Image 1: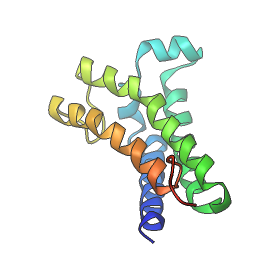
Image 2: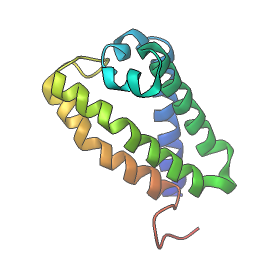
Image 3: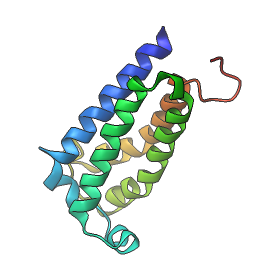
Length: 133
C-alpha cells in the first residue's frame, strides 16, 4: 500500500509540474532553458518548456492509468528526471530564477533532490532490482 500511495503522490507531483510548465510558470521556465538545449533540439525555449510539460502530464497519467506497465513507466519517469538534470545544473550555475527557485540555495537543494526523485520513481513502481511485483 505504501508504494501505491507513493506512486499516486509522484503522479500528482508530475501533473502539477506539467500544468505549471504549460500554464502559470511557462514564462519563468523559458528563461532557465539553456541555450545549448535549443541548438541540440533545433527549436525554441518555449517549445522545450511545453514539451517537458506535456511529458510530465503523460508520465503522471501513465503512473496511474497503466498499472500493468508500472515498471516500464517507472523507468521512463526516472529517465526523464535524469534527462532534465543538466538543465537544473545550468539553472543553478547561472543563477536564473524560476517558479519556486528564486535563490541559489533553493536551486542547489533542487539538485540534491533529483536523485531522490529518480529513486522515488523506481521504488514506487517496483522497478528497482530485487523488488517484488
